[in-house]
Amino acid sequence: MLATALPYLRLMRLDRPIGTLLLLWPTLAALWLAARGMPSITLVIVFSLGTLLMRSAGCVINDFADRDWDRHVKRTAARPLTTGAVTQRAAIVLFAALSLLSLLLLFVALDKLIGWPSGRGQATITLAHITFAMAYVTVVVRSRLAHMDHSLEEAALDLGARPLK
Image (tube, rainbow, N blue to C red):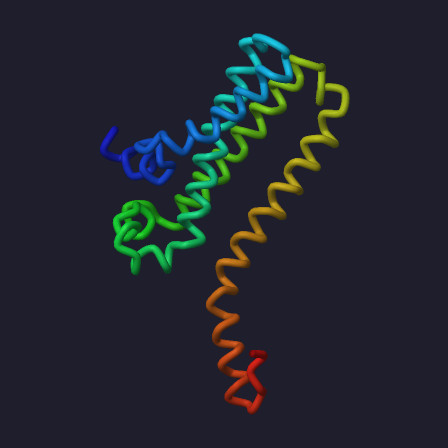
């Protein structure tokens, strides 16, 4: 079981916690400053889990976006997505799951702290899903168009267009 999960944990960079800690320290400092002392344990847990989930989601989508470049760079050539230990589809599903978990965490925390979004539940969840879907489509389309832009530029030059430089 752990052998199956290990490439996914590496894709999320859970084997390298320093990035999460670098994000967590200013987050917790801001919580302490905003609370003018010790914040509630609920806030500390929510912000700590949110930091871990979103940092992990960021690592996954970054590796997905850079998958074609990473295999040419010595430092990143052994990453799970580049080596094929994790498929592109699995990486996108993992990114979506991590993002949805953090969104769910946000909803649960806000409901417990201020009673939101219970009164506005359906509209809030719909808006969150639309926002997430737009972000997902933007990342996927942009990664796909990266190669197309280059070929379109070459085609335009072949047709006699002048370079923009």
